[in-house]
Image (cartoon, rainbow, N blue to C red; front, side, top):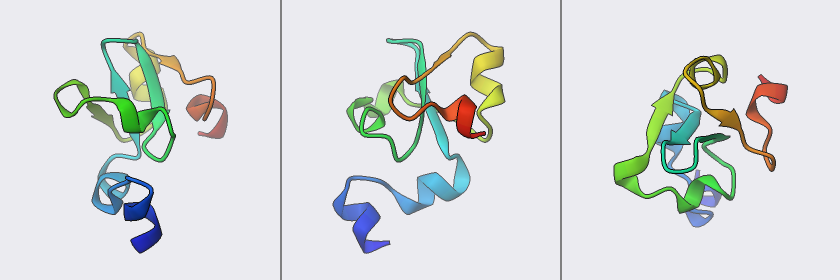
Length: 70
């Protein structure tokens, strides 16, 4: 857990909703993705599966490819 925190990832967030998306870019990422760290708190949308955000129009991140890994 310490390593996750040092990398800027909240273990609580990963256990509750491992996917995050932002309406500003329309992208969904794994919560551990380097791009997810740049999502401002007020723009974070949490999801429990990779299918949920894509069903409502978000596209997968090109770095972490959450749909391919789902």
